[in-house]
Length: 57
Length: 253
Image (cartoon, rainbow over all chains, first blue to last red; front, side):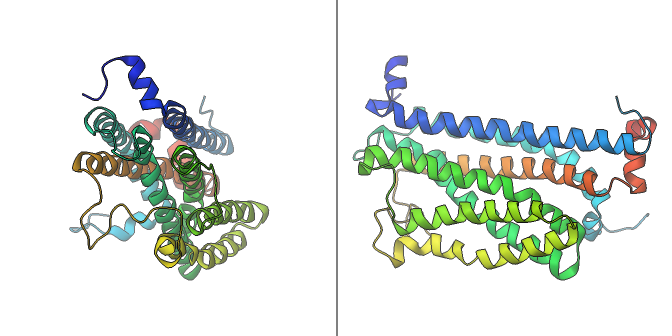
């Protein structure tokens, strides 16, 4: 085990800002992109349903 | 319909692709989550602190996979764009368009995490070194491709113009990859190569490879989702889309 406490883990040997700054931005982007893609798909599906006159809720 | 062998070209039809990708996507998300969870656990709790770079090196578990993906996705995008252009294959052009935002995102992540690694390690967020500069150009190529295809109203002409930009821009990818060899860059050389032993501890390598496979699964899942959206946007008038959106048919599908 590398860390003896949670604070040691978050400190990352003094590099906390850099390590977590990298991971946080990556997490935001990779969390957001699938949501946007799924929303675009749902929108396209709804639009296609309206087109043929079927209410897809 | 009842053919004895599987005909893979069937999936070149947007309707088949739509169904297959829809079935695969949840599995791809599950694989991505599992691999990323394991990779991060090994990366943070098993892999030791680096002797020279301290714990700052743990950024490479996302930096290197993101940088690899940024280059691979560009080549895949250029490849499908070229196929769509040369053979007038509808689905290929749609896949090319769906790849661009994901590739751009991975390029941005590679640059961002690189800066956050460079600051403590080199003492600078950014340097105009060949590796960094060519990766920044890659980001502009992605953004240029996306801007171009959305700016042209005629879908087919937009796809063709996009394909031209994508294919010409592909020359940048080998430049990025070999930049650390061709020029005397501040960026370190390749961590892994085909003809030499990896220059890192095996637990570090394991974490990095698991994260790479996780990013692969992620890219497939998100690109499939976006391609399905584009298929529906473009084939709105097709009979199969009508069948798809009819509530009764949807239960069966």
